[in-house]
Length: 487
Image (cartoon, rainbow, N blue to C red; front, top):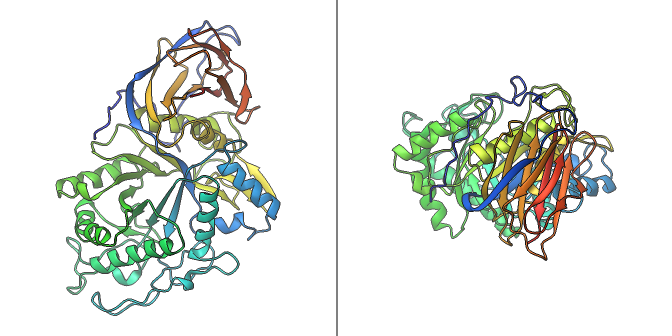
């Protein structure tokens, strides 16, 4: 089905640009008049599938002590990522399908290291060859996946950055070659599309043998970029050429994994490829539309029958920071709260994923930064947690509005159990006193508030309830609060 689109205007264009939500100067501290926020459970938008991240390219090995993290802090990091009580309660994991011949850190080992010589020759797959000593199969990702599922992750998405080099016209997994056999690409008359389809299905089968179901599989990652690491280029027509082979192959496998496409580097780049797939008549082969948020900022919804996920985004160039708010820089938690709001309220996304969950890094590329046995938790994690802790897979975004609330960004979701979570971001420099009306309040309904800012990390705060008329709360400057009702 097509999801009801909203017409809010995008307020900014790039996470790397100037602060997208500049400080709003309103009333003095604590002096704002009460703003009425109205929730309408009858006006419904897109479904919610979850929030998540990746631990690809062996980032997961850092969680398990590759750089000195103790077992106690391994458990602590996993709790921060997945716990519904003390963490962000993430429910989606994105894995990388490897294409490299070896697996030193920052590479992912392929399950087919040897060129069979021709697309019709029998391939030799090597699942055991993907072991990262000390960390397990699939360059350590199998262990990450098992622990994630044990701690509540509900959806696993496996995505290939590149096909093996022998399948591409440049005979290299890097530097953006093209899949041999698609429109406009001649590899001495050889068509490797079926070989690549079989390769991806075999990867899924290996996970099935380990007791893990992969929900979605992608065959492209940022197919608009020619880069020095694992990459493969494709336009929409060329993607459709592969789907022509991949879809029936996956259907014949007996797996109920669905195909995702195309993980473009930005919203415009992904839209272009989806439109090409649609023009080729291949949209029906997809189960999910995917995009990143780098090269072009998420804006208007895609015109597609499928759900849309933002599957990778991070601040890769900004000044490193763990802060919630100082000056609105690109890595701050408040900035990411607004980015997530944009994805749900404007772009009608059904999921939002950060690039890396936890990693040994000093940049903003991860939500949790590891340094030996020291764990640094960025406020970006709690921006994600404000949604993922209280909005569960299967929820539906519902309408929320307020007049004269220029400092506020708001979303609301109704969970399948009838509970409602309203997210209120105050981008202003004064406290916003709000009365939330339209909530499904009954005598037995419990209501709670959860605050994140410079001083609070998803902290419980009491809110005032006045019968069935509404809920009153005060949202401090440069803060985010979730108001949550019980089902």
